[in-house]
Length: 90
Image (cartoon, rainbow, N blue to C red; front, side):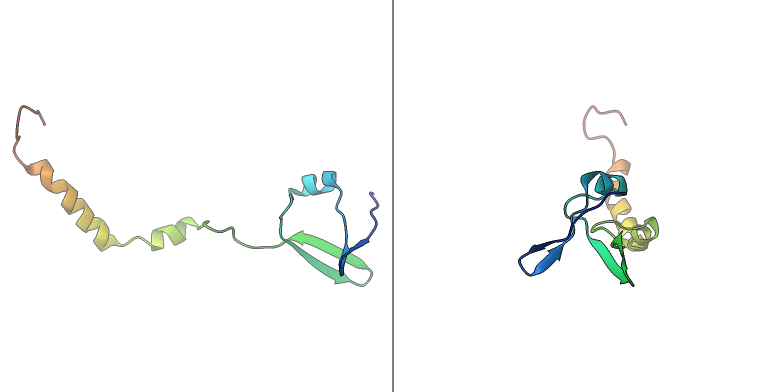
């Protein structure tokens, strides 16, 4: 068990988490933590949040507009049915 000492910084009481413990927990500088007190014990856990920009596959698929996809496919397929304009072989 590692011991650490509380210190005062400005108006806050600061707890220093040893680097090896933070590394084992996967925490780095800037990691958002939830701190809870239960009697004389304190619990520290990473805050449960979804990182910006991350979506589930279901959320990504829900954002697809089928009508827009059909219009896009029709627009790009138009040139595939035209007769050859030069010496190209299709």
